[in-house]
Image 1 (cartoon, helix red, strand yellow):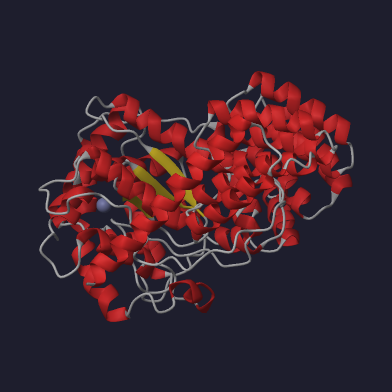
Image 2: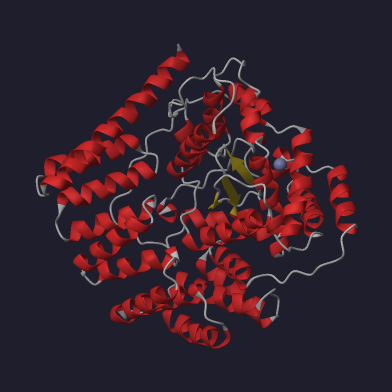
Length: 524
Ligand SMILES: [Zn+2]
């Protein structure tokens, strides 16, 4: 998954957040180095089919949104645009496939949404494996949060404050209006968005090859100036975001506190402001306003969820060398330098697993299980400790029991069939995965697991079909077409399966053609 890729994570982007300079590393936030380059690890569906060869993501990879002269983007158009942007992010390794982290962000985000009555659109939150401090909203309700920002937040209310601000950029249609405002510029607005996505990548050599030739720096700079939110948008996102934070029961002083933390972080970064500050500039005015709002409220303490601490510990366990991560948690526990003891123990187990020190991992896991309340992340890591200790039947049993209790936790939904595949129980794995695909039809990684199960069964039509869906989910439409062509040639399916493949193949070919057409139209 993303961690399989040796490529350094891209620095992110956005419609809302745009940065051309390399990401400034921030002391507290080195998570993504590990997140992208390491081999490990716990929390991932293990490697299987070869990684797709990603085509260069060209600015013409735009959805056909119909009549560009229409006055306003419809919600459906916004969603389609956001989806296209997310696919580009996935293709470039900018979408962290860590279900525990993403599940948590979605739970936190939806707590804020549920508390406010004005939210009508769907939202999807996801982590971006990048140490740069950033968060951004895309059209259609997609909100990305860099791992660096999650590690910088010292309590859950601070992270919630950032999400509340981003949610508001979406609900107030700031993103759509920003795009809208550029209608008569030289670039088709949507093409501008795609270019911006490319431009915002880290300018490091490692990611440069993807962007290569796609655009000139000067073009990118022009687009950047077009895509910043207005000052008024920022103030509005703060004001309404504050109300969301309050309505959902978080500590409202956290908004000002986190803005100050961001400003302090800048001082360590030698002139390069973190992305977030460039795209949502924090001024003294904004901090003062946030403080004044909080002062008008009675002080309310908010107890951080255990999930918040567990997710941060997991992200911290990905930072740097595995042995360094072990040392970090050993030290934190010895010196009592942690915000949450259970999470610190969890982080130690995760680091030991990464370091493949199984004897110690088992010992520390026993301690963790003694002190922790029932928790899906403890169940999942316990299964992984069994798995990596060579106890395959024990791991399968553990995942099975955990799933009965937490059927919607995607980490477990991936881990269980994966363990079945390792035990050569391909038919069981395929049957389980098919049922999950019915429940979560838009989940790409499930298709990848299904492809592996069918490969084990030597069912080629089904294997290529699922691999094709996985590539499509990643935004690699040409790769998807190739897989569906192989599926069509496989000749080992029934009539129904063959016609599903044919229909899907035609749809994918149409989509590829549309993208190419859009590209030509733009250049002409
Ligand atoms: Zn903003």
